[in-house]
Image (cartoon, rainbow, N blue to C red; front, side, top):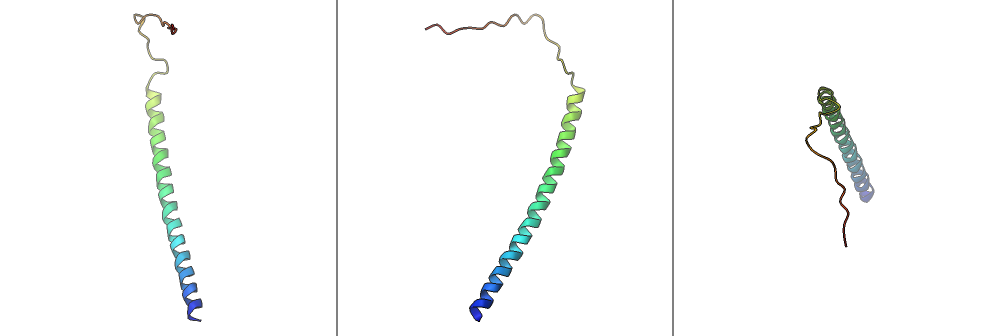
Length: 70
């Protein structure tokens, strides 16, 4: 009988611990989600202020594709 009650207590402690861990984990995930949404909103604001086509310097020159010689 004592063994059975000890097993019940262990199972209840494990169940309570898993519930607490789930609550903490869910809160952390929600907080990280809010931070990432805030970060994404700031990034879109920064990208909107930058021009889409940056000005290219015409004095740079041509692109040359080099091939390996063996």
